[in-house]
Length: 235
Image (cartoon, helix red, strand yellow):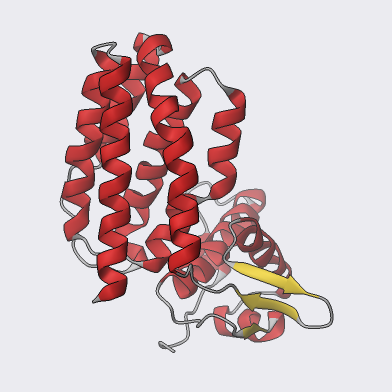
């Protein structure tokens, strides 16, 4: 495991200095510290998580640690077992990865196809802004380095799902937390540029109001993403 992370209330204080803001920032900081430990594999799958131990390691009270663990459980990164507490969730195996992508391939090309019909100019502009924020090159393969890119990646896909005008598709894709699980399994900064190029093809087709091309571009992007993960697992 890496050196213990130290987090203090003072470090989390924002410029306003208000007590309420400090509490919010401490909760978020503890959550991100725990996410870093999980996404960078400093906490191995199956590890039992001690609330008291994490609180000592992060130099905070146990309350924000409990809240952070609950959020990580909703992300599928930890599991809670009766009489055992929280454990680090297992990584996706080959079968689970294929299942995840098979479902995405059923839903996301359809979402892109519908978005090509229904997306508003405001929604297209939002997708474009998100994509432009993904272009700067990343340096490093740690969660700290790619966290922003991962959040933008999820936001881009979620924006397309919202533009599909299908609440069921949008809600189902959000619940999968697909990007969290994929990036936890594997991330190298070199894949960011490939993903941006593939996203651009999807956006171009949606903007051109070409449903078939949008569906095809999304399908190709997902298959390329799955291939990158598969090749990593085989290496």
